[in-house]
Image (tube, rainbow, N blue to C red; front, side, top):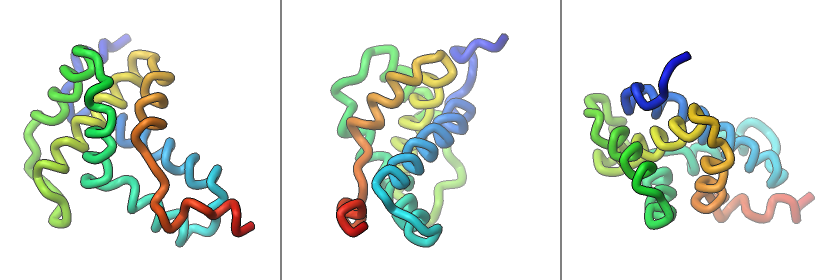
Length: 134
């Protein structure tokens, strides 16, 4: 068995990216959004460096010392391929948040990962009333 404490920030973020993506996809489906075009458009607004950085900052004060340490491991891991539409600071923060989500998942603390996501991730305004339209 591997020890998640021995994984680097990039590997933790790789897992955390999947955790966030699945959380967002479930949220969109539960909101009543349908059709791949609308689902993808809403997801792109929620899963990008700027949105993920905002999500992190909304829960930052609620993190434990251990969680902040894991976030910093992801944030500081050295990023060479920043997407051209993202600011370096947002990309690094987003990677740190993803690393934290990955770490929590790999250490069987999915409930805590979901708690942080539920406190920080919001539907884009133009999709908030989808269930009312049906």
